[in-house]
Amino acid sequence: MPHSIRSMGIVLSLFALASAALAQPATVKDPEAVPMPSVAANVNGQPIYEVAVERALMSIPEDERTKARQEVVQYLVDNAVIDQYLAALKVAVEPMDVDQHLATFKEEVKKHDQDFALMLKRMKLTEAELKEQIFHQLRWEKFVNMQATDVKLKALFNHMPEAFNGTTLRARHILIDAGTDPKARQDATAKLLELKAQIQKEIADGMAKLPADADNLAKEKQRQQLIEDCFGEVAKKISTCPSKAEGGELPWFPRYGSMVEQFSKAAYALKPFEISDVVTTTFGCHLIVVVGRKDGPATKFEDDKVKDAVKEVYEARLKEAVLDQMKPRAKVEIVPMK
Image (cartoon, rainbow, N blue to C red; front, side, top):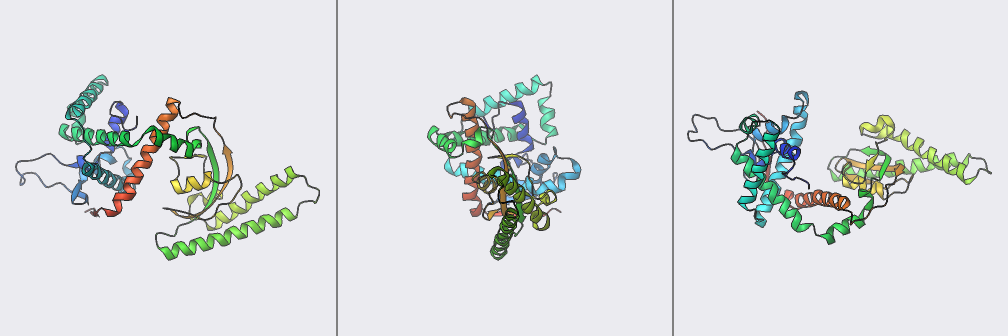
């Protein structure tokens, strides 16, 4: 089950991905003796303390921490938004469930010959904070279980069965990073449509050079090669993605979990060697062409492993939906580093 406290590996990951609510420092009696904790961000007035960011960055190589910091802060902000949303819904968790999971965690730590108190100290975490983190995790799981009915899960499976059978695609793309300015995105879209027309003309000109008696197999092989070559050359010249060096070619990717949803959805809707219309994502505006597809075996929703995989995807999409709804309404302040 995603986010379960029962697995030692997932429990330990909770330390690295601590939620904003658990960044609260231990209460002190003499505020003059202990410096006030630094704040990394505020979400609707709730502080995210710097210690939570430091905790998450522990697993990142030192030379990459500056780059990773922004992503970590945004992750903690997202967690705070979700925690506040669930609190407003009054999703309840029994204290005995928290205690039971804490006891299980302590047993797992002991089995791995680790000292519980030392582990908490190393992670700059108190037992009270760990219990609160377990509480938030259990509350999220309960919310997911309330939402993830068999009807909804089966509908998701039927909507994109290729996400659960190992199907992968290989694609090329041309990206123009237009930021968030509407005019810049409009210009990028117009530019990509011009490029698409240019590529299609080059393909048509190349096909016209084939012998009149060429068979259908030869024609299709030539068409596919022309698409890869023409598309790739334009990607090398125009694309703002690092993949431009390879003519916009991307590694094989599954339907869900590797690419942003707008990109993946558009790519999986294409036939092989069909060039997409302009696709807009958080990265910018794209043209996409699928140049390879490996279909997985047929799967059934009733298979327990398949159902678990569907629930995992449903949970991720549910989190995205909550953030899409609540984050624009939240008052978020990112505090510059001193």
